[in-house]
Length: 480
Image (cartoon, rainbow, N blue to C red; front, side, top):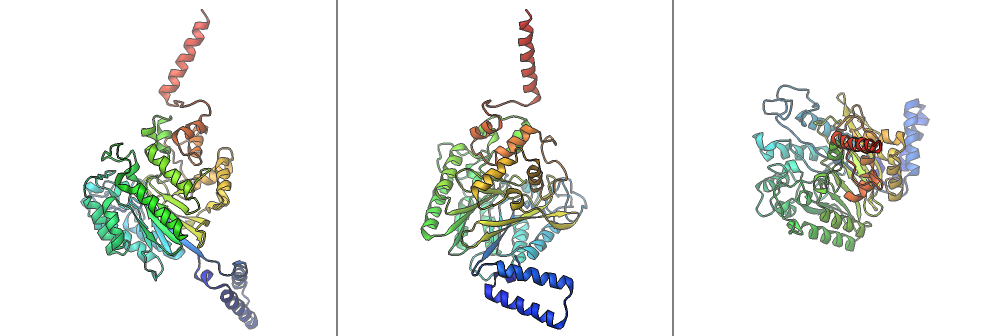
């Protein structure tokens, strides 16, 4: 959003009309300049008096690697490498600098980072938390407008790679890495001291951005099958996080405030795993969250759907979203790191400052050293604020090839230059797995959507061979 759009309506009109009249009187009617003034005038007239909007910069999975291009760099980049990164490697300093410059030129107000701040295999890198979290916090703060508010302008969630070891959240003891991350974020004014006290316990907290908007930051590793520090199923509310969420939502509703929820691992099915194995295996292998946490969480989203405006997650690296028939829409923010061959990219959501519903969501992506404006999400999915319309648009992806191809561009980070699927080609079954996960939530619902009335179909070569053998035996028996 350009700064003049947030000026009072009458002032904008007066200033623009005066300037356009001045140009006309002086005879300086250069075609390009006149076109610009006409566009500004039209916009000024169309903006309702007193309307305001808020820009949210949405980034995820930065996986910042200060050792990129050095002997201890992650992946293939252990020798001098392209300064803006390459597939197979994590985010280098040059890419972080380029990203934040583009954010500075295109966004304002607030940045949301949904986790995996630091590089893969951090635990064997020899790096400190200050080496990874420090530059990220500093650069993201610099990229935004001067902060005249009392609250931090950057909200950060914790991802699995921000836990050491990876995916390890032990709720029975103090986590020294969470403490270090909190201390670094406080030092860069990304986290308040009062927030850090809560964050150090299990990596979750909440903050008020204004009297009208609050952000709740969750650590969903606590609810995830992926947690390598075993939490017994008898623990009904690890770290008390679900009760914390319930209390925060109730307080926000009572205050008439809207809420944005951010975290890392989404309450989705692991689409990549299902596609890779060519079948549904079991709920613990295919779903990210344990079902009882997913059920309780989704019920809260239904109960507070007029309070929670949006949910943002990361982890998957590829863009997706979910619009259930009842509840709050959620978006997977795609990755900055190009490690898995996506374009480095991020989103900018412009939301109404009263309802906090999105009016537009832009995708910015890096290609051949230059940042580009991708297709806006509303050009693919229609009205982003209308859940029923969004739900219908998602269903159309099953049969509408034009919409599907637009979605693939979003999924790949702005432009689908290569097929980002485990087996390269995405056939009809693959397409159904992807799309059904966008409007169905439970494991059983998704399977039924993909294979109506047929249950779990094994599409692996071994499974297909067994089916073929069975049919051959049945055919052979009919001959005798």
